[in-house]
Image (cartoon, rainbow, N blue to C red; front, top):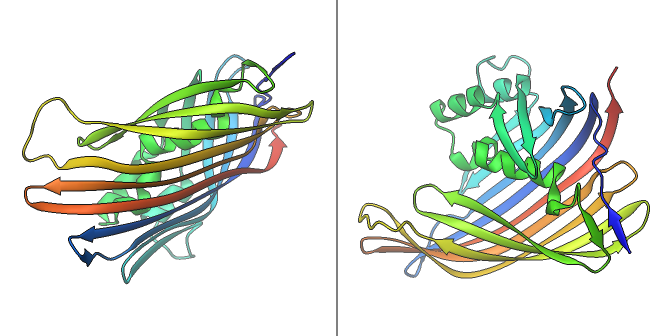
Length: 276
């Protein structure tokens, strides 16, 4: 027997998700340990489906939360909504007021608009990319796809125990492309919910042309795992979880830095409301 998984996100319906992201970065150069970096984001996404019944268009408002980054002894945090009296053109103010729109094309997010003012203000304020990079098009699209179209599940028909592989790619500046192959398995399913899990394999692609000014990178090790609980009653993600640990070596001339990244992303639906 097979089950069909349908999209229950109706027009003018708003679902709120807790978006929690944690990253730890450790680097060494030779025998010297560089300052540890920590990224910690805890946000609330209010996502509303807009347009007519056939349009896959959505709006996103960041209703509350924090973006945090620690580099050694330096700590930076943006709070949403910002404290009273914060300049209206400060990055936190712009993000708090922004309504970001995007379109789904199958499992992919396209045509993101409304994040530009925040990104420009964050860059001009000299903030670290690790603090605001979550809202660049590539990273934001990845998060939204994992909320709305995880595991290529919505719109599909799957059998209990079935496995399939979802391929995604993520560019790392002009240095390389990370190719992820996530092999999902439908572990349990009933009328109310489905539970899936997936190991994640990673390969690295370098540009074909040689450029001595471009840093080199090798992938030394990688482990990744994802899980998904899908609410079949309402046709939305209940929780998506991703963990990853990887070690890379970056080189430029005679300089070599080994970097270990450990990250956890948890996306959890917390409530929904029906618009008028």
